[in-house]
Image (cartoon, rainbow over all chains, first blue to last red; front, side):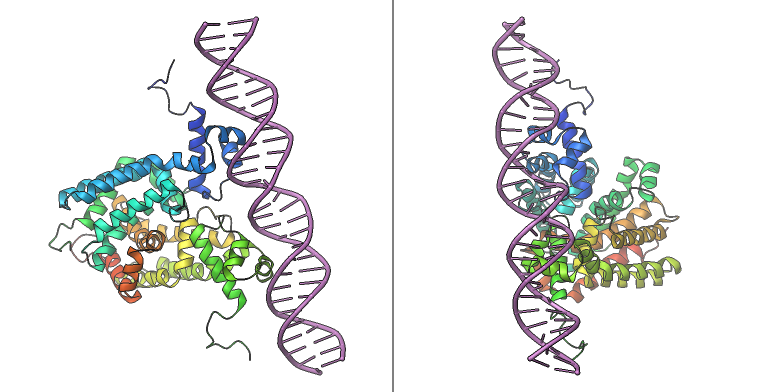
Length: 204
Length: 204
DNA sequence: GCAGGATCTGACCGATCGGTCAAGTACCGT
DNA sequence: ACGGTACTTGACCGATCGGTCAGATCCTGC
């Protein structure tokens, strides 16, 4: 039978390898991960890894490309649209969805986006972040820039750091007690409060 | 003359090497940095690096230990003291000072604290973060935990990400137009607004 | 049954890794 | 002048790195 759309997503070998690679890259870093580790972790040989993916870089590219592309369209739409409160609210929701839906890739890109700047797909991601920062910062005071920076970076890193520091106790407890929906709601609320003040405070 | 307290801090070879190492670790990652790179960057040979520091790990330890120790005392004082608004305000100020005063070490620890968890000094730092999270999260709602998480992570990562993504244009522009004092003030303001609401909203 | 592509693997390659070692140099108090 | 100490370095080591290649094995269409 050809590619069954309803099949469980983790049957194909290349997907297993990709997921193992992404997990290792996000956990111990791209430079700190060897092809041997990826192979071992996925239950294949190093040669098999290089059969499915031309190189270590290709593995990284395949792993984070979907997340980067989602980020690019999100940023592009936000940057060209007018910055009304409604547009901001929609952006916040979709941004949080991206964070939650691509955790591994986001973690990887966020914590290593600078050191991996030579890799084309990462460069594209960095450029997207820069566009977002421009759209956010243009004409804003330093305090406003700080507010946006803390909001976006905070939302991103709160999740990343959660997976980073609290794999064991607190975070697993927090993440198991609360569903993804609850986390999403709480996160959206905090960002909304930061970026779309309900009281009389001017936004810029 | 013995160690002159008023001498410029960058005369000794071990300091040059340590600074070069810290810079490389923070920029391209601990695993991604070779002793040869550190030596080249500082203008010494690889053997000289290993003469002044017993190993690559020792270099890391020496580099981030001061920042970790400052973090430990800060967290300890905050955790054992009562969480009054005044105590929170004092904590915020000292926390931002730590961020600004130990940029390289903070960047390194924040973005690689998980992957380097085997190294004793990093483990201590992670433990301190965990204590801080406990002190902050105990008894708080998920929304409140998110608020604290976004605030601390956001403040930390806003600076780190600044140095990470915007070495070139925006950040250097932003960082050169504004002094450290201005940045500090803006950051403290945002955190204060997030953690010590002036309006009637309950803190927990 | 058999040809042929897809998949998987061990052997192997040059380069680089972190680290050791002994020799060399420069400066010190005596 | 001398012995010792602090410092620097190139040569060298075993291990591991990312990557190549030539088979094995398996599955499928004919």
